[in-house]
Length: 267
Image (cartoon, rainbow, N blue to C red; front, side):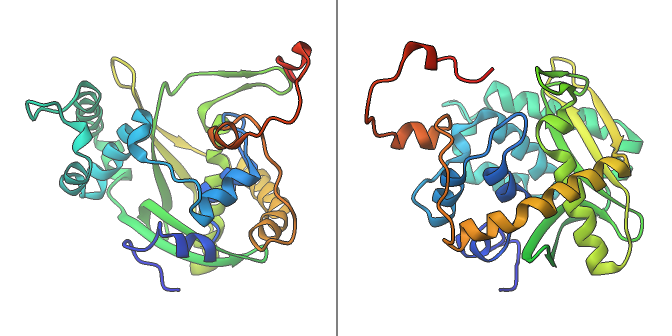
């Protein structure tokens, strides 16, 4: 299947290819646990999620669309962003402020000035992978745009300590996969950068260089987990339910009472 911007997110493309977002649906991140049955339900179309249901996702996509040059189309496709009087709702007015903050910084815009939404595919770890790069500078670097609650926000975890937002949401995994797919296609291992903009009252911006050691570690994790994902997609093994995601809540079937001590779960 030849991927284009029109079919990149199609069900057919997701069935044939593995992507970072699909990988995270199966395996999860520290910030959002994975669920195998949920991931398969998304793939086969029995569970559909609307972008409009998540304001955070909509704001991030709004900013992405601006830098892609497709904001007018995005607005036309999502009338929910507008109030009855035709003006943008407050969260999208804020998104415009975030965009303006980015555009006032010459270095930020330099990193975001590469080739937009570049699609690449590669065979890796027994799977066909697809990626879509926000800003690709051939032979120089890979840049991904991220909106976040706060660039310096810390996420505590009782077992591993504190994480930044890259570790919390699996962006090291994304960087590792993107870097490897580009290397397979071009023969060049390029540095990976995050161009970050925060959703705070006063938006913060940063260009973040991701250490190669962290990308290598993440790629090893992807290599280890990919065979199991392929077996799940091929129906060779039965998926496990997480019992905490929206899909599992919506499809739960009670079979017996639980003890009150089970309500807390693992801590």
